[in-house]
Length: 172
Image (cartoon, rainbow, N blue to C red):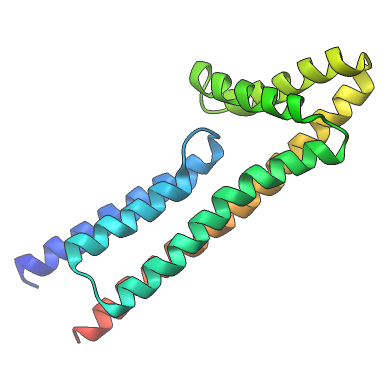
């Protein structure tokens, strides 16, 4: 094994490590884990070189990243809306999530979002049970959104591993 191969394998290990950090960062609402995974693949393509295989895999990874990021917002909002939350309360949850992520990472975003939703709903509805139902819906939406993001992040990393394997087998 020559120095160039050692450098390539080291770079692939570093890229995989960054992608795994992106995958685990999906548990923190304010950190764009899917974007971290995608940027790692783009940087890898720039350093290694672009081929038709890399362009195709990056295209699929880009679509997955966009779908994952959009589904996140949709599932969380839909969960709250399904239980009767207002759009104002959902906006309050977004603000609470941002503040919570800054003040108390990594779980502060989730707690802040739920508290923001609850505070607006309790003022709007004047019934704690209805406000509680809204946060239950949002919490369920958060759970589904996390599951979708983790699945999509795993698929993106798997596509990158296939890309690396194709590169390995093409040099044999």
